[in-house]
Structures are given as C-alpha cells and as structure tokens.
Length: 146
Ligand SMILES: CC(C)(COP(=O)(O)OP(=O)(O)OC[C@H]1O[C@@H](n2cnc3c(N)ncnc32)[C@H](O)[C@@H]1OP(=O)(O)O)[C@@H](O)C(=O)NCCC(=O)NCCS
Image 1 (tube, rainbow, N blue to C red):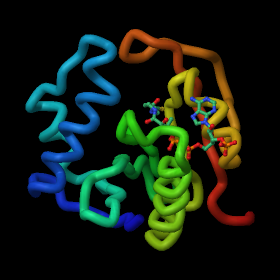
Image 2: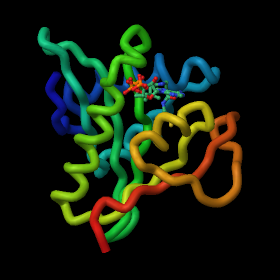
Image 3: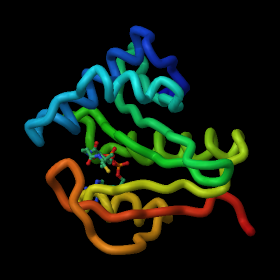
Image 4: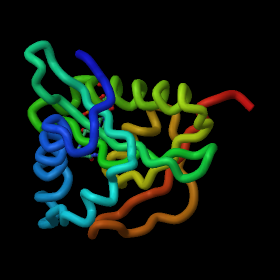
C-alpha cells in the first residue's frame, strides 16, 4: 500500500472525485458541483494505492490557519472497508500535516465514523449537528506535544 499527495485537476484527482462520489455523496442523494470542486484547488489531496496502482482510498486536508488543519472527505473503497486502509491513510495524513507545521487536526466527523476516529486518538467536542443531511460531531487531535 502506498499513500501519497496527488494534484488537484490531475487524472488521479478525477479518480478520487469518482470514489468520493460513490462512497460519500451518492448514498445521500447528493452530487458534487463544479464550484465545490474548484473551491478545493488549494487543499491537499492525499490518496492510497494498491499493488496494481489502483486507488483504494482518499482524503482532503484543508488548512484553517497556521496551526489547525481540517481532515475532510475520507473515503475508502466500499469493498475494502474494515481492512485497515482508512487507518493507514489517516495516520499518513497526520505525518503529512505535521511535516508542514500544523499542530492540530480537526474535522466534522459523521456520527457513524466517530468510533473509527476515537480509536485513532481523536476527541469529540461541542454539540451534535447536522451536515449533508446526517448527524456529525466536531473532533480534533493534537499532533504535537505541547
Ligand atoms: C470510516 C472509514 C473511513 C474507515 O476506514 P476503514 O478502512 O474502513 O477502517 P479501518 O479498517 O482502518 O478501521 C480500523 C478500526 O475501526 C473500526 N471501524 C471502522 N469503521 C468503523 C465504524 N464506522 N464504526 C465503528 N468502528 C469502525 C474497524 O472495525 C477497525 O477495527 P479493528 O482494528 O478492531 O478491526 C471507511 O469505512 C469509509 O470510507 N466509510 C464510509 C465513508 C465514511 O463514513 N467516511 C468518513 C466520513 S467522516
């Protein structure tokens, strides 16, 4: 398994949009608008590939300020969920963020995925809220010892 950064607008990026569409959007009856995709051009796009160079999973990191960076759009191929790929990619993204000087990872986690992130050291804070039609929680993890 190989995790790496990919470029917005590249063929690899288009593949991740297709994966996010299947895993995150279509089950909610939503689609990506071209404005949404354009707005993520300055975000970091990370992806995980298998031995045959096939896409397994992807996520986005969006800097909020100099310290905090937001993890978004975490999607693992449906037939491979529960096999450790999400864990590998999230941990890779934490190192990626640390190397770029960020000290805290934040997110709006779907309630169904909260136990997954808790296992990885993320803590819930604030109130439960609704986003993209389903319940979410704010979560965060300090990436460096203070
Ligand atoms: C949530 C998601 C990213 C997790 O990635 P994954 O590769 O399936 O997770 P892993 O196999 O690395 O999981 C690690 C552990 O968390 C557990 N886990 C994974 N998803 C879980 C969930 N939704 N609820 C409870 N436990 C979960 C796994 O069983 C595993 O436990 P184990 O080590 O005892 O076997 C992935 O399942 C996914 O894409 N889900 C659909 C989209 C989604 O919800 N994305 C997150 C939006 S915030």
